[in-house]
Amino acid sequence: MGKPGCHLCDDADVIIDAIASEFPSVQVVRHNILDDARLFDEWHNDIPVVLIDGVQHSSWRIDSNKFRTALEAAIA
Image 1 (cartoon, helix red, strand yellow):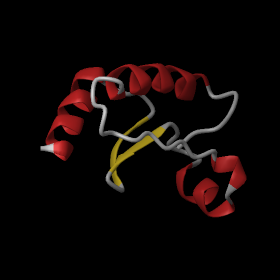
Image 2: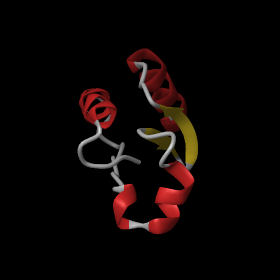
Image 3: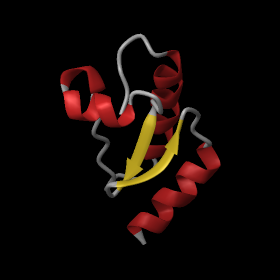
């Protein structure tokens, strides 16, 4: 979850794309919270938010090692 103009979201995108590229079966889906009032209400204080299989993994800053470990566990 994120929005345009969010520098933390831009930072997260770089990490997400790099790590996700190591896992061909992983599909990255981005949601712009400005396009959906429900998403905005739920997440606007926490973006960027990363969900893995619908469960919140992280918000604000993404730790690449923890993200990689979480993806490995999710696809195992």
